[in-house]
Length: 453
Image 1 (cartoon, rainbow, N blue to C red):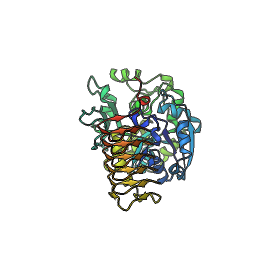
Image 2: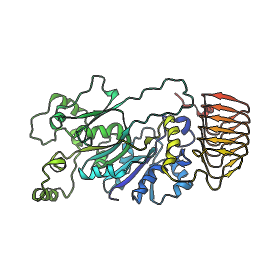
Image 3: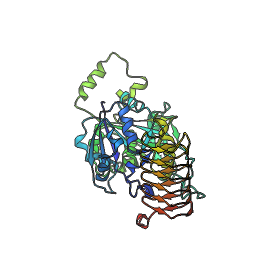
Image 4: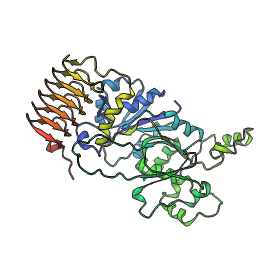
């Protein structure tokens, strides 16, 4: 591929700590595959032969023993970084800058999508863009989340995204939290694009094509720590900023105020290459009329341009909350035509299993059990007369006879005692539920797993 792929897999999963306390987010099982397997598979399907994986030493160690990761045919250039809560995604790109030789495709390890990657890459190439990104319509989560039944959902703050009439040129981006004084659009944008569509209800998929010059810029400007929170808004904003040598009239006061927030002048982002004079000469002498239409801006407009591909259909979800994790466990397996029961699983003929359930490797499922709309992880034992409905059972779990588990998430190596009844609960890694226990709408973790405040 003409782009270098970079997978961000060092995040700690701060919004789903009950799941990620003992298992790093990148290695959480989704449909009995590690979460990071999905973006790796996406890259492999479109022809990438190598990917730089930025992760922690803990994840790197787990990758070396995971059979699904070992099945990936691409070369994985794993770069291990310290588990530092202050290191953002832009910091991680800065860290690998010596490895970057061309433009890059960056994506997050928690992205599960069936998006056609070429849609984003084609936008990036056709318009000679500085950045092209993927967004999708916000997904409505329908499943009941353990520990949250009956509680009012916290409203997510919306992004306001401005695009041109084609719906592809990204002109404006702001979060609701930053708009206390109302929505303000620069006059320099409106002069070039008098008709702008403002969209809400979109989610950033954390998949970006970026010019190599952007990575080089990050090495000079160390104040930018996050791609999504700082770099992307900066690039979108700078599209219509005045260049240092511009002879045009001074921008309006509101533009000047915004410029102060755009960083020091000596760290301007310059998008150019050694071949710039030759490219300019080719454009001037070209017999093809590229001065009009869609290509005019790419050849004769500002050098900094941002584009967005918005998915209207298909699956596009970031697994960064417990609600998202539960939802994708239902949806992700549908992306692949694989047998729902692993060949090595030992399942009794007297077990009732729905076609929408998944049984992992080396599982033992006993007589008179009922498993419906659930995922059973590898090396899990389910004993007699157990009912499992709408639940996610991770790896190495033991469920004793006569249990009823509904709408719950049972983390790896947990033991559910005989006759226990769990409804809409999350049971933490390695926890033991006492026999005959009745628990509803609870988060059950050990005291050592509680997050300090």
